[in-house]
Image (cartoon, rainbow, N blue to C red; front, top):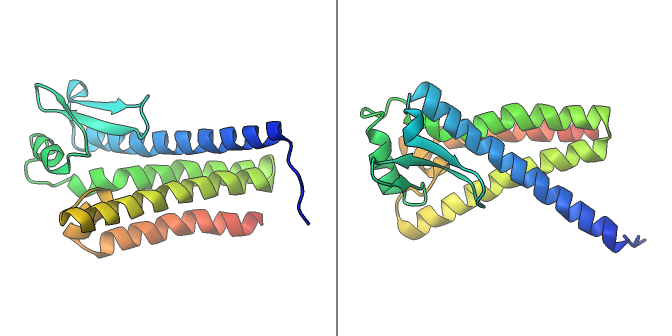
Length: 182
């Protein structure tokens, strides 16, 4: 049976989904920013969240200009000014996923319990989708360029078990609540 949705309902659904994805990406990038400031101790005037753009990202300053992680080799060079031994690089790379899971999964589950299961499943699914898309883009770009292109490939370069464990942990924190809500 097919149920017709009024145009206004479809527009609101798409707008809501976009807003959830927008907030999820913001939370993810705030994880990187937090790790940069608190773990790596990058000075506030050398790191910034570039928020109004899509996709968002955390930029680092080389002293003359802001460097985006889309130019990963240059980004890593600038990053090395603050963490020359790469003691915290894995934490910095993983922080987006860790904070996203730590914030979005409990919020989505709580919304599912308090407001309605459909809302919780939507929030959790959107967060899961964002991470799957991040990982897929990273894998594709890494295969195409032949060098690390994002958080997962950086972690893979360090130890293949890291991104696998991160994805499994992240996934379980989302899929578990989705199963409980459905």
